[in-house]
Image (cartoon, rainbow over all chains, first blue to last red; front, side):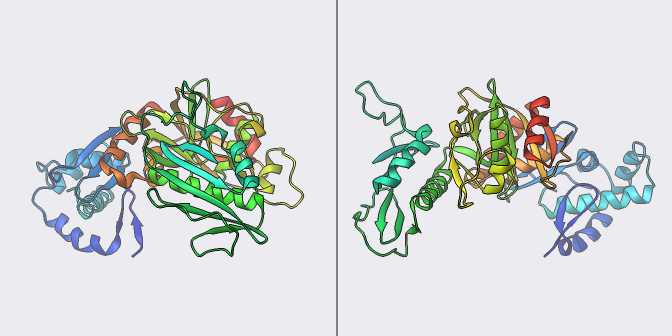
Length: 111
Length: 286
């Protein structure tokens, strides 16, 4: 199954993402992280370790910003709005990136 | 007979004198220190000994690895067995001995071992994690020729407990191209040759060593055009984790250890062209 690279810096098999994508778009709140997931700051980036699967995700800057907001307190649109205030990008592009990143994090068992 | 200690694992190599004698020179960095009685010191962790037997065949040699606790087979001439690595001559047999030692040492290593070349200067170590065939040994040789001390051309070893850096100065195996690229004379038959740090005019790096740079090499071609640019720390973390031989032993600790080490190093991306040009660039920046 070929992996797909998303602009927010994670890799996940494409098939898993189609199902998770719908879940992300319809969720009331995004997050919180799965219990036991270890998050470590590495400069401005964040590294994640999943003790259940021994999986690792090394998030780039934008994916790290998403991670900081998936605490179970924000909706998808709130996250998009918060990132829109920081990034000089079209809100639809930001929304697409957030959905993909969150879907990747769910597929990896981090959320 | 040759008693060796590689990455805290113990080995005994015995058999054909022509091979064992040359192995002693190539692997002198791994001879255990002598105790007060002049006998080899077993060391604080005197664990099981893996035997490597070299026996003569008609027209060559056979190399057998025997697991600890299993009596080794007799060293008698005979055809190559199915569990043996067979070489046609002394250099071939030596290459197989070194390969067998390497595989067994990495499998048993008491450290987090990452596939990387490592050199040092004044106790500060530079590691370049990369896969097989990506130029680690050639770049290592070029750096040794440029005055760096030798840590390893195979593995960056970080102590599981405290992250301290272990040396693993196994013999470098250089192709005819690699030897020419770093300005060494080639052998008449064009075969790969095993060389020690001393053969390259360098020393084995002395402890203690501290990792200060991680360099991520990308091959271009052999004609020049090297470049060295800063890279994000997460790329070093990705390289160290994905290139590890044995992170599976303790995945959580491997993750922790890498994230303990990486924040303290500078990370670079190196576009490899000529190995000697790359060595000069690294010598200026690291």
